[in-house]
Amino acid sequence: MTALTSTTSTPACLDAKDIFQNPLLEEPPTSTAGAAVRREYGALVREAEKVCASCPLVQQCLYDAVVKHDVSGLCAGTTRKERNEIRARLGVTVAPEDFDTLAGVTARHRQVDHDEVVRLRRANPHESLEMLAHRLGCSLSTVKRHLRKARTQTTVTPIRKKTVPTMGQVIEVFRQVKGHATRTRRSGRAAAAA
Image 1 (cartoon, helix red, strand yellow):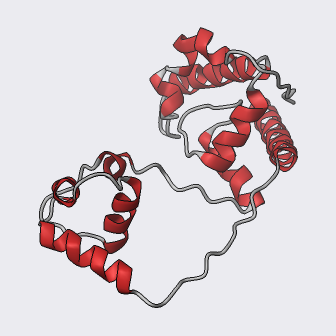
Image 2 (tube, rainbow, N blue to C red):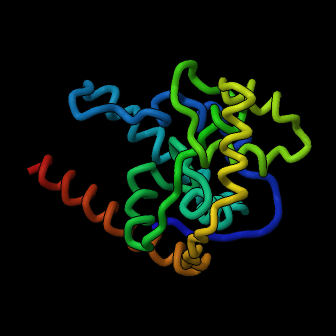
């Protein structure tokens, strides 16, 4: 079982870049991968988990990786699959980051999304409408039409407040998932040895 501690310091993974930036941790091998590749992946995961367990920032890293950001690879001693299981148990949904939209990169010849126009305008209130149109890949009149529609909409959609889990809840479910994963690995090894 992984111990969780937290103080203010530097993340331990910064000193273990060779482990955490290994492409195998970013994209785990498929079940059809060779035994040597799967063993290498297992060794990398164990090493990364040890580094995470010794990190003074592991609790905050775990919380952020489960509740705030959809990260890939091994993070806070968890794989993507384990973080997804933690999220499912807590009822947490994290949307993947849309870096293209945030950067203003859009595909040509596609319909401009109304909510995207409004969101970009709110995110960039000092930017000219021409610049927004350029970022969206549409005409100035399209941007104006969407913004006018947003101003004249009379229906207000109520915002549902999402319940965000506490740090303690995330850590408790983490322990449950990691305990289950450890028991599963042990029983799998025992079955393979028999």
